[in-house]
Length: 388
Ligand SMILES: Cc1cc2nc3c(=O)[nH]c(=O)nc-3n(C[C@H](O)[C@H](O)[C@H](O)COP(=O)(O)OP(=O)(O)OC[C@H]3O[C@@H](n4cnc5c(N)ncnc54)[C@H](O)[C@@H]3O)c2cc1C
Ligand SMILES: NC(=O)c1ccc[n+]([C@@H]2O[C@H](COP(=O)([O-])OP(=O)(O)OC[C@H]3O[C@@H](n4cnc5c(N)ncnc54)[C@H](OP(=O)(O)O)[C@@H]3O)[C@@H](O)[C@H]2O)c1
Image (cartoon, rainbow, N blue to C red; front, side, top):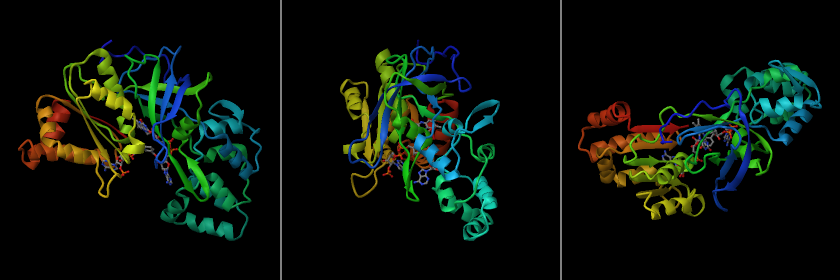
């Protein structure tokens, strides 16, 4: 199979996910890190699922059992109450665990609570907040249902009424960090665990928290599906050079690209820009990337450890430092890839690419912007983004 062959239709989909097994779960960040980023291997054996580099894996997560119990307790419900949801019937506890977001509350719930409370200071406070959208947003930020119910006790909700007020949970996507040429029946993920402490209680991201808790075992209970990438693919020609910019978990698909190219003997050059907070604790897959470099699979590796010095150093600073070489790789036909944070990083990297075309390509600012936005991205389809 070449890197660009279309997969046959997968037997399992978002509507009919496969129950997969967690084969491995280990920390990539080291002790002393301010972050927790984990390597998760998902065993797909027996599913018939296939994937390509650039794809993502969709995960349906469950809430932690203790949060479900805390919520039931705060509501005075047992969890054994039978409820119906879209034609399915199950105990309330099961629906709370699998179908709803419990790590943050909603304005809809706060408004319903304000109606239910007995007259008094607690009701007055929440009713006043409900009159002002901005104040209500600010108040609810970082609060979950348990926080809200504990600070405003006394309201009771029927089980069906309760689930009518909660937000349904959606699957989360994670970029595939492994190559099918090496791991045809296993998918690797690089997961940054969302964990924060607000209003006296620890909160966990729904899916990243769920994955972080899973121990490798023989149980097949993680519902997954493959979400094919639209354009984030290796180039057709194995001799094409790649420039890959992947700070943080953005590095995941590039580990897959390098594995795939090494396994298939692609001859194109590979250049990776990686960034994280500290070299000592946050250099994700350090040994593997150094080994790729040692073997010549990774032609160039530039790192930006943002917090190892007083001034922030980011991947785009390394791009500018290497602007002349980067420009000549682009002129020689390299494809440019960026993956990771969409809000700030990808925008800055985009602007840096334009600056490089201006400073090192001799284009005026308008021509440089046109080169990146039109020539590279649209006409030549050599600029690929997978940002979130
Ligand atoms: C195509 C694609 C690929 C992706 N690939 C990866 C990947 O490879 N690795 C990866 O880790 N992620 C990846 N993501 C992101 C991933 O899908 C999830 O969005 C991410 O893991 C968070 O989901 P969660 O369910 O753990 O957190 P959620 O339950 O959704 O919680 C996150 C929310 O918590 C709130 N929050 C966070 N911190 C605080 C705080 N301090 N105070 C108050 N509220 C706070 C914010 O509202 C935030 O949006 C990808 C996303 C896409 C779309
Ligand atoms: N929805 C969610 O809650 C959630 C959860 C997990 C991940 N994500 C998304 O995934 C992204 C990746 O998260 P991550 O933890 O792997 O890494 P990250 O937050 O992107 O951080 C990786 C590196 O990028 C640096 N960085 C910060 N701003 C930058 C910029 N403007 N340009 C270039 N580099 C910059 C960081 O430096 P400093 O930190 O020192 O500034 C750090 O060194 C997140 O930013 C977020 O968009 C979302």
